[in-house]
Length: 197
Image 1: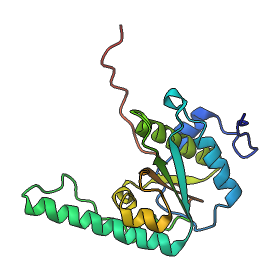
Image 2 (image 1 turned 120 degrees about the vertical axis):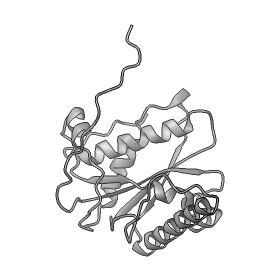
Image 3 (image 1 turned 90 degrees about the vertical axis):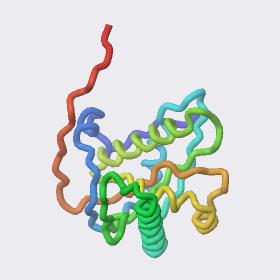
């Protein structure tokens, strides 16, 4: 039986981690370290999982050149989508100009992939992502989901480059690293309660 992860670094309460977690878009570039990444992956796999399928698998990318090429491909895919929508007379609802490096020069990218196992694979993978991000926050690290990378990561070319089996689907690319400065909090709307009987 796998033992639950407990580290001295993760002493922040769960509620503190929930309220302090930010989408960090500026990193020092300092390497995260293999042991720390393993701790984050161990936290991820303790997420809830439908019928105990545990459909997740992970890719860890620390190679700056690979991340740069993936960033360039992701931006090109976005530009192609924007051009095709424009030609069809349907402009994108919000115009987003990506940064030069969509991974914000973070030292590590963790991609959560899902195995084609059942109806709840996507939910399970995102629950694992939340665990990973909260654990990173508790360790003083920053994270940010980079959804723009998903289309590129799911191409046969990138799966082949990374050695990812073709049947796997990338759901949650998350950069991880030491924040360069403080990311201010953002506001949230009050919960919209539709029914409370």
